[in-house]
Image (cartoon, rainbow, N blue to C red):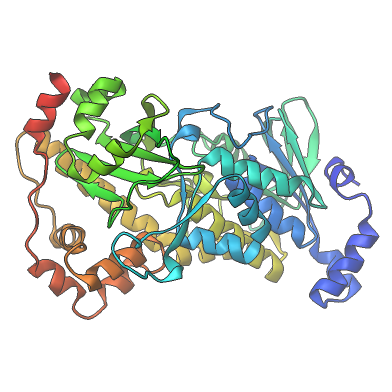
Length: 482
């Protein structure tokens, strides 16, 4: 029995008996379907995968380089750890369906349920319900549930130095049979799950197995984020706007409720817009934020409880996508930012990771052959999340071009699809059908193709008069450089 098994499965026969009762399979089927799983990374993506797979009887060991376990009030870590986070309705639905005890733990720690369309409708549908909570709150809730979960062990302060190859299972494609830790330990695994984030070293390790010389690099940053958290003296929240995200000349604004009576305001700018880098100064940030009418109520309702939290968001990029029917390796899948980084402006990353965790569980239930697990998982993720990923890439490319044109004093027009996208954005507050379409898309409840196919939605958006962008870039620059 491997070290991973010893640490998380003290009684394998009890486990098999439980699986027979739980799944209705024979004892042989139950024994055959349980495997050792090593998860790299104890963030939300890795912990969600670990909880779902361990619940199915797989023996799961989670390795994380960080020696400290997050606490709900923690402000430590990389800058992205401290930035605003939201579980969109699609992600919250996965948690409620698969891990309701985690949802309860998040709420007990101060997480706030809020409806994405509550500011636009008197009685919005419950399917638009989201969860506002900083990442430390979400991670602490996941850790608390993981600590009392059988078959699951978390080892902190342990990094991985290499993927160890086994016998190829698919026409010469390398197969990952184990991982080597930094201290020289070998952990055998029927499956390795990379959940170690956008800066994952696993891409370079895969290239070593494939004997490729090209380096594996972290995606370049596309936008910079300048956020502040606020809280009112009486604990009340400001009135929710009709829509939390707005795009203006050079800047996007994001106003989000948070946990424990807090809320956050974020200014999003292009990383190439050098003059915006002075937004890290509190007085400059406040002068700029005060120019946006949609933020006035949020600024005046309470006092800031943090300085300006700065972060560089990664560009929307896939990491080592599968080419045709041949995976780069077998025995290894990726989730969260290790699968692909997404633009943080739309808060889809954590929800995508939860969808991936659920899909991996379903694939593992249906298929145990290492080469087929990888392909079926990738197919399932591409079908479920590919449209949202592609839309983020499209938006990011055009938005950056639009901002850069504004920096040079020019106007960016884009193609017909960008014209439709901007029209939908501008018309959502004026037309209830367009607002429903944008609510479904922003909540990840409907794909862009489904939204655009709805009768009348595009025509209504194109016919609406676009409001003037306020403030103009010149006014914003005057406030920043004053």
